[in-house]
Image 1 (cartoon, helix red, strand yellow):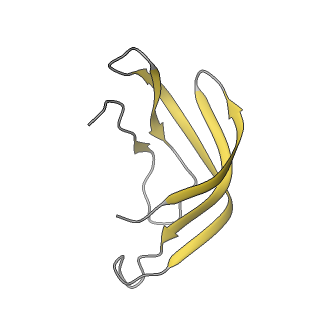
Image 2 (cartoon, one colour; image 1 turned 90 degrees about the vertical axis):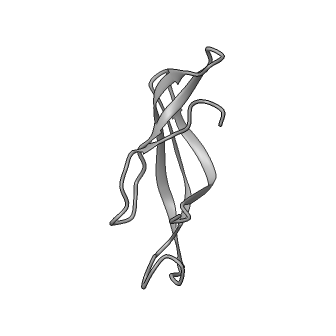
Length: 84
């Protein structure tokens, strides 16, 4: 758990293929490790939702979350598209 959190999102674009917002991002620094590391805040962070797919009910949902990430973090994230 690297504790990535987005807040105060302002959506700048929303199309059939993607949705983009800008906001504040907070994440664990994991220095010296994730349990003891601090939190870093980034203002003006960009988040984009992509790859719409149909869920069990036929509704379109976003399935990937490629985002501006701090060094060492992987992207895109796969999003859960079906209820757990």
